[in-house]
Amino acid sequence: EIEDRVGGGDGFASGFAYGFLNGLTPQECVEIGAAHGALLQSTRGDTSQITKDELMHVTKGGSARIKR
Image (cartoon, rainbow, N blue to C red; front, side, top):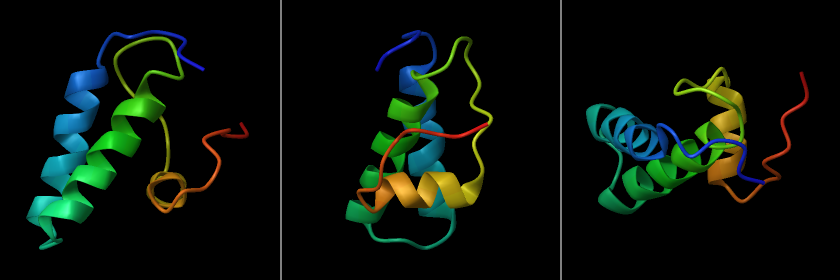
């Protein structure tokens, strides 16, 4: 569920850049970018506080419900 749209594009860009800088395929970069952009919009503000493990879980099709 979208909580705040602020930062969604930046979240995509940073996720994509992470994948690119780590030598992943273009498809993997897009998937990580999309997952990070979506997760970022699920909390208020323009930063995410998710872990790498949480991001990879969502990238692989897992639930976006993050337990805090």
